[in-house]
Image 1 (cartoon, rainbow, N blue to C red):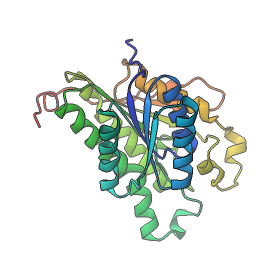
Image 2: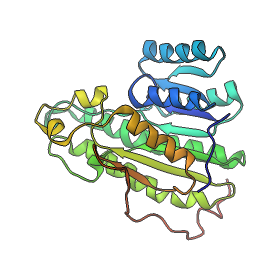
Image 3: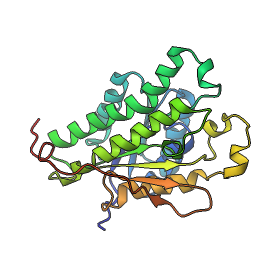
Length: 264
């Protein structure tokens, strides 16, 4: 497959202050790209950005407050990329929330926020990025973050799992965007528990001990693969500790002419 080089590319990363987002920012800059980070953890996000700029002695990163539950913040983050660096090449919908209490003890507001952050925000981010790529005649790439809980229901996280199933289906439904000229590829990673703050919030019910835990780097390298490997379109990469990453072999959208003939 053709490799989309990250060199000189501009990536927007939500949830960029820690965990997968922070490490992905570091890997993209290592490969010669630039990053625009958004998060609600402002002091941590500014620190990540400032550290990268200090390390590379130039402005390879900017940080901006972004609550993906507010769609205007997502648009503003994309606008910031264009203002700072001239273009958008890659959008990574990484921001997500878990939930540390039984879902039926949550109130409706917190359940709605889980759906807003984990499902509606990646859909909206993808929509905004796709419109940008089409309007500017640019190839582009979107990376979504799903979860193995999209495929394996667990009793303590039905709402979280439902959002992640939605991300996998939405990503698969975007497969035909890669047939456009220039192509737009939307892919996802679907890791099992990884060594992040979210996993540390999981109820101590033996699941982590039983299933093991992925390293952040293992997951982020597959996020990089979603960008670089242009053989991937509408794909979700399943990840379990101690096993090789596996492409989900579910159905993907097939071309009907509706998308490739669309004009904005």
